Each structure stands twice: as C-alpha cells, then as structure tokens.
Length: 117
Image 1 (cartoon, rainbow, N blue to C red):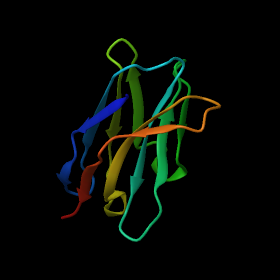
Image 2 (image 1 turned 90 degrees about the horizontal axis):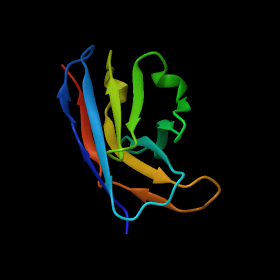
Image 3 (image 1 turned 45 degrees about the vertical axis):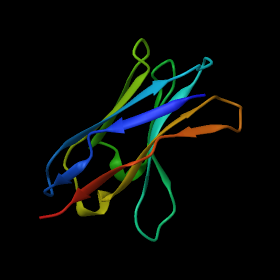
Image 4 (image 1 turned 90 degrees about the vertical axis):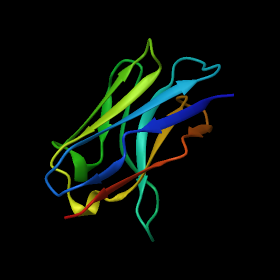
C-alpha cells in the first residue's frame, strides 16, 4: 500500500511564498510520476504540476513562472516551491503518485493553502 503525506501548507499574504513537500512510503513500483493537484471551493480538482522519474515537468498555465516542482527519488519525495502567490491560488493541495499507462492514482490527505491579506 502506498501512502503519501503532505506538509507545508498555511496562510500567506499575496506575493508571498510557500513550499509544499510530500513523502511517499510503501511498496512503490517504478517508474512513477509525482505531482500536485489542487481543489478550490466549488471547483474541480486540477493539475498544478507533475514530474516524471526523468525530471520531465508539466505545469498548469496559471502557475508557470511562479511554481517549481522537484523530486528526490532516493527519499521518494516531491516538493512544490510556490512564489508570487495570488488569492486565486487558495485551495487544498493534494500530492499525487501514478504509474504511466496505468489507471491507478494514489492521493495524499491534502494540505490547505490560503493566500489572503
């Protein structure tokens, strides 16, 4: 069983920064993609960014140039550095792990990010 545990959410003012981290544990087959999704109240869950085992990255247009995703394969961790945060970035952020070509996703419990003055 794969478990994902997020940390690093919180309250920040517009223009500020936060760093989210996610640690994976359990029996994880390779290769796998790790990423971050978010869900704001009344909206669907959306991809923020993901990263492949070979460090290929994919970002939502709304966060390009502001967010950076990275991973540490040895520690089975993925991080999301969020800069220049905007109120519209407010959401619950979920860590995700999936295997390419397989319809199976693992999710963390979510961490709240609130951007407000």
